Length: 196
Image (cartoon, rainbow, N blue to C red; front, side, top):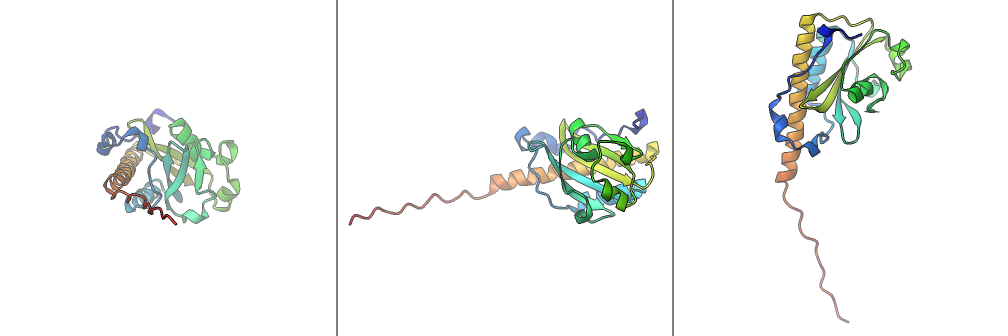
């Protein structure tokens, strides 16, 4: 269920995006940064969602990895890696669009139903983290009942998505700079030929 007031999008001008070459959009090591963990925790509190996860996108490989989780440890998620199109999170990544589902058990896009059932979860709100046409990740909120957010809560969620986008862009930029500033590899050592 998506209504006009449910559209949540990050601002398109997150500063570091222009500094990243297009070929590096997928370079993100999967480590939980304090910013990503904070975004997941704040989104959980804001929406009163028992489980919130922030997935990091690798557009080149068309896959997602868990970057941060609030309410559950990443190890208890049914999957820690998804492909674009797989499950609700993968659908959000492939479509680059929000997805709001009141009953995941009635929607064929969702996988891992045993996990949902065992945690008493049944609803989903997935939001893409996109900056300048780059998919950086997906914020997924899971609830025990339909997640009904006010316009004000949706605006706050958009600000959290901006924080996540800036953190992910910063991580990409650090990885690029680290590669550029790394000392060159020493030349291969060649042994002199011995004549016997």
